[in-house]
Length: 297
Image 1 (cartoon, rainbow, N blue to C red):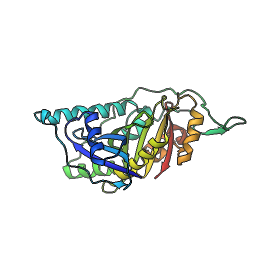
Image 2: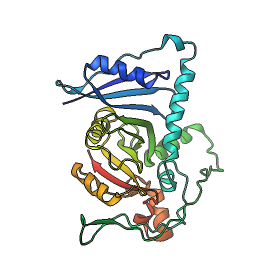
Image 3: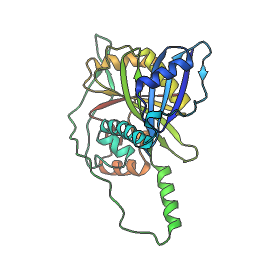
Image 4: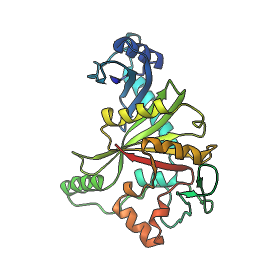
């Protein structure tokens, strides 16, 4: 069975301090740890995954403080949170920035990336093909409207409606798998009504992940997505430069991961603009850097 413990702190604890604290409280080996922050970058929360006979999810512990750093805890917390956010956003390429942040690759650019695993004779029967290289445009800042509503109330309503229609990032995180010796960065996205959004956990697997023990890490990631972040989907982003990418993608199918695109997370406005420009909306929502594998939880 598994167990997840949680800590919330406004200051930046050392990873070993959190790890030792969680191990003492759960009285069982910690198999994985997650450190997350929301977009406000003011609080870093920690979750620790361990094997236990009782199972279940523990009630979050009370916030802990470091007496030696009580003079400036908020500054330490903001530094840790901003570091997590910066590292996660650095991994997002043009299409991901377009879908989740509203800027990046323009719809006028047409990628030609095949995201399917093509059947071939010999080997494991799978092969990932790429039609041609994508021309990635440097991301630009989103345009701001030049019109200003006459009253403040319509502004709030328009902002709320826009937020509900677009996919937005709700949290950034880092996960450390102590069994497989791997570290993953990612984010939690939200889409739909603000009071009851649909959440998805996106995690980046870099090209060094192949050859490591992933089974225990995936089990921890699934529990993390469902129990801690209330996600309905898990999306793994595999680096396309990974050695043995086709076999790795095939092997990840045991847990239910399948090849997908980002179309389901794109706003209807973006879909319409892409379809009008190319009639190739499916190909547009792929990446030249990442191969997306998703599953419902």
